[in-house]
Length: 129
Ligand SMILES: Cc1cc2nc3c(=O)[nH]c(=O)nc-3n(C[C@H](O)[C@H](O)[C@H](O)COP(=O)(O)O)c2cc1C
Image (cartoon, rainbow, N blue to C red; front, side, top):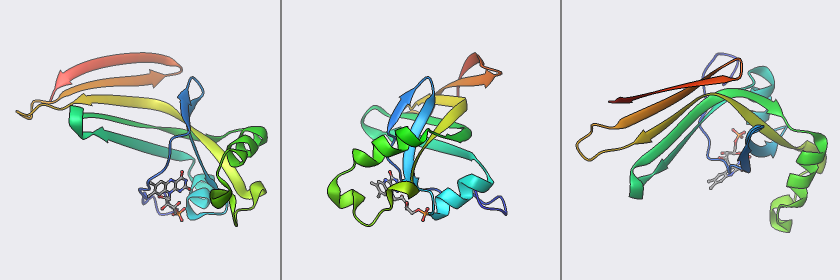
């Protein structure tokens, strides 16, 4: 999201999902890096057409440790490392506050399961929409 509150969508590789959040990596000096410095929030959306399932989530973004960013950079191929300053490479995590699981239905009565986090306590609800 830029300083005017306008979001940007981008295709990124999810580097891992665990209790610490959903990880992704990029150059700190990129446009997205600047936007994350100003507004540390992000959203993700995944869609699996063969099974008609989607996952969407949103949350605050936190930088990982320098060691984690260095390890991610080291795991990249030589071609992917070329021309990138290792000090500029960063791993971030989105800490989810809301995650939705959708099961699509051919009759368009899709199932929506919503998980929301309030101070670390998760609640969930389900509906047909
Ligand atoms: C398949 C695919 C995977 C990508 N993975 C990443 C990624 O993991 N990290 C990244 O910074 N950019 C990745 N990109 C490029 C981003 O989508 C984005 O366009 C680019 O980083 C420029 O963003 P900017 O607005 O910060 O300049 C990927 C693009 C594609 C098509």
